[in-house]
Length: 398
Ligand SMILES: *Cc1c(COP(=O)(O)O)cnc(C)c1O
Image (cartoon, rainbow, N blue to C red; front, side):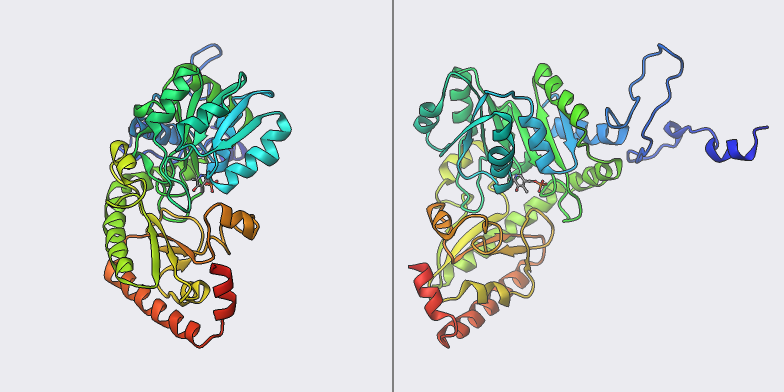
C-alpha cells in the first residue's frame, strides 16, 4: 500500500476512454505518460498537442475543407502564427481595409522583424498585380471587410496568387465556414477570430488557422508549438460547443438582419445601408458567386438630421460594444469606438463618416430589435431638432 503523500499525487487509475462520454472531455493534463521509453505516443506535452484542442481542430479542419487546423488563444495569436511562417525580407500584399489589429501587427510588429508590406484595394486585380515584387510571398485579405462590407473575390485573388507562386491567406471571421469556404476557392490559409461567430457567445477569445497543404501545415504547427499561443483545453471545449450551433445562429441572425434592413430602408434618416447580402447592394453579385450569405454584420449612414451619438446612446436593447458574431445584438459607432486609432481625415479617407453605424445582429426576436431602432431614431431626432448637437453634427457630416 502506498503512503498518503504518494496517494495525494497518484489518484485512482485514469481510464477516461471507457466512459461513453458524448462530448470530448476537457483534458487539463499538461503532460502525458510514455508507456515505456521509445514507445510511440500521440501526446506528450499539452502545448505540443492536447486531445481537447485536437478535437476542435479536427472539427474546424473538416468544416473549412482543410487537412489540419490549429487553434490559438485569440484571433491575433492565430494571425501572428500564420504570418510568422515568413522571414525577414519577405513581402506581403495586404487588403487596405483589413482588421485594425492586423494592421497594427503588420506595421508595428512584423515590420520591425523585416517583413515588407504593401496595402492595396484587393477588389482590384490590377492593383494586386502592380504590387507584386520579386520577394512577394503572399496576399492577405478579408473577403468582406469592416465596417463597409467591401467584397473581394477569393477565387480572383487566388488565381493571381497561383500565377505568381504566392500564398493566398484569407481572414474568414466575418462569414465563417457556414457561408464561405476559402480553401475550396483556392486559398491556402484560412484564419479566424473564433472569438466571433465560431464561439458565438461573447465569452471566449480564440483563433484558428486552417490549411490544406501538409507542408504548409508543418510550418504553421512549428510556429504554434514554438511560440506557444495555444487555445486552452477549457477554451477548446467552449469553442467546440459554440461551433455546434453556428448554422442555426447564423440562419436566425441573417433572417433578423434582413428585417432590420427592410426597416432601415423605410426611414428617411437612413442615407445608405452597407450589406452585400441583398440584391442592389454593392458587392452582392460578386459575393453570391462564392458565399452562401453575407453574414450578420451591416453598417448604415445616418443623415445629418440625426445625431449618431444620441441615436446610439438611445438604443436600449442593442448593446453598445465592439466585436460581433454573438447571440446578442451589438451596435457601435466606428468613428468613436472601433476606429479611433485613425485621425478624422484618415477615417474619412477610409469611408468612415461620423454618421456611420455598425450593427452585429443577434438571435433575439426581430420585432424587439426594430422597435428599439424606431424609438432611438425618434428620440435622437428630437434631441437633434432641439439643436443641442446640431452644429457639431452638420459640420462633421459635410
Ligand atoms: C476580431 C477580429 C480579429 C482579431 O481577433 P481577436 O480574437 O480579437 O484576437 C481578426 N480579424 C477580424 C476580421 C476580426 O473581426
